Image: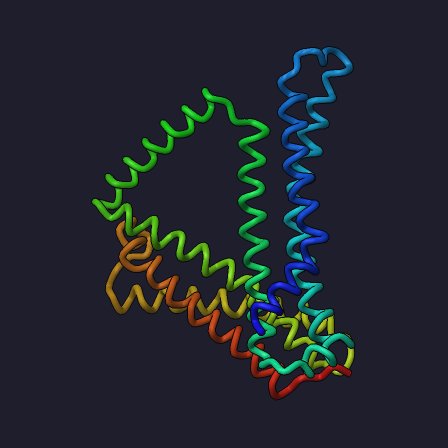
Length: 261
């Protein structure tokens, strides 16, 4: 059943987000062509700049669209009149959350890939790519020196944190929307208030935990060596805990406190 829910969610979101991804790639190609031409002089010199601005706007539009559609689909599909149908399906509430979360992550990663590919289409040249890889090699070598052979561990921990952080951002939105629907009136405003409160509280709690952990382990959080040894591993653990709390809170509200009126 989860597969069917994911398929349905992909079908519903593809009609909006897939064209935006394609438009971004087309605009990156147009930007590449316009910028490479040397016929725009004088007053016409504004055209390459307009192409670049349009391309940048398309990146912003894609990012905002992914965020808004993710929020819209979760709220409208589960917490409005459509929710009466969704919650009568022979499927557990966690499967509904999972389908939304998985598709939201898929589109987030797809958006990141689309932006990276479009940047390469728009601006990459053999010379710039060679320079990029040279700089990258120098950066990696510098990391190896700074972190005393813990470079690989640092990179792995970094990407785990990024991945878990993306999930965390989505689940934070979900739990805020779930809390907001507990309000009898002004549910959207309640969701915004819940988001701000939960976000600020979690950030303060994270800082407090890191400071306490540093004192217990008798290390300084400003020392470089603490990044792969303490800060990133601790961040992974904290994010996993917050992800679980946000997910379970959303699931609990849907199971026990659902209010679609």
